[in-house]
Image (cartoon, rainbow, N blue to C red; front, side):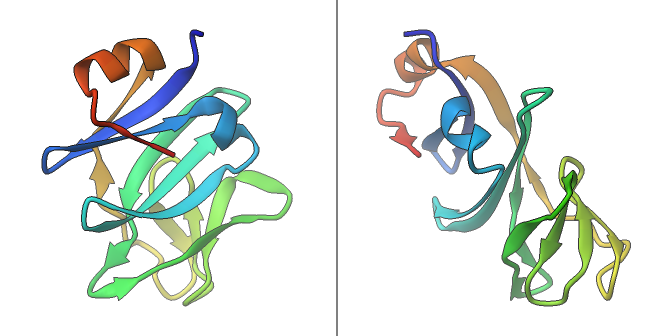
Length: 121
């Protein structure tokens, strides 16, 4: 099958997030490769991004803002963030930016050829 994935490699470890899984779960709070990560996915444009969830020695947990698939909120401070940029636009953390991890879109068959030990979400 030609399933699309959002793949990320960190410290020699690879993980792939299938588009079909992310469509039903546009915000994923994950722990992988020793990092707390946030994966966001906007299904209409099929655009995704991967960020670190730690900010200034604080771990953040995110959820989608009801009624707006481009905004997310952290549960710890209630700050509102732009989902695809990782920038807080309202609340106590306004102006802060999450660290972005390099990620790629790929077909699963190609990704798994390059990274055969990939962890699949």
